[in-house]
Length: 219
Length: 191
Image 1 (cartoon, rainbow over the protein chains, first blue to last red):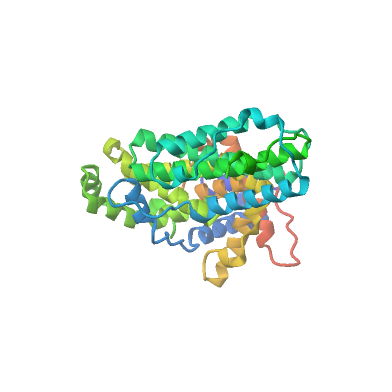
Image 2 (tube, chains in turn purple, green; image 1 turned 60 degrees about the vertical axis):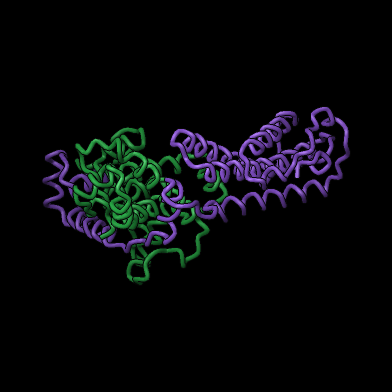
């Protein structure tokens, strides 16, 4: 019987193995050839070409460390594309289900001022986040059965928000500059906005009748 | 050779960087960003995520420099931070949801690194591995991590590392074997 892959890898790496296995590999042409192939594969892996670090990475890192003025948002395409896609899906779902106003009226937030996201202050963004979270909490529980795409979109938005929260916790502990913190909060508000849309559409599909996010001023 | 452990930073550069010397910090970045980025890209397929992680790694390195004890290898310290960040991402629900959607497998052929034609088959075989197997084979075979170190980073056992390495090698062998050749070797325990 030949040696197992794990044993051959251990032999290749000079790790302790059973003496019988060692003797077998020494005598067996097949196992010997396999060890040679494994060594060659390791050499090929070691010589794979390098990736070049993105040219803007250093300036972005410096910005985060207050060494130079803050650079433009680095979250760019990934976060905005996800948020945009979620908003489009939500709008589509909402339009196809003609939701009317009623039950959620009780939790209607004050008109949410997008201006807050533009004027540069952090406090309004935090307040905006809190209002959106209150709205999310007021929505009914998520349905047990739902479309896979909706579920995936919600999961994606939630994990992006969690990811941002981790970053916010990190910058708070590390004392990042105000521009960096504001940028993170601004991104969080936009993601929460998209999440409200999708969750609302999901609730509407499940039969929940409520005011639309548009009517609630969550734009 | 792409391995980070082959990189070198002069001790005086590290000392100056710890003291807050901006030029020394920039030097560290320029010396290590390529190997760190390569390491991250081998573990995390998506370039946008890898760039984000590269940023996070260097922000943490530069922020933590004053508390770096300087008793161990500086490169080892950097590598440990990079691997931790990349594995944290691989464990995140975000990555799992992308994997569930099959998004990691949709990268165009042009994303496969390396203009070198002879390495293209290996690049593609490597990228087609499951994320954990790919990480283990890269960390072990290229970065020189021991099974114990890999197990510690993953929070798993040494057996886990060994079995993942073995699985990765089996899959790489199958993907790289010439057309028409059957893989029949080895597999069972020796008697």
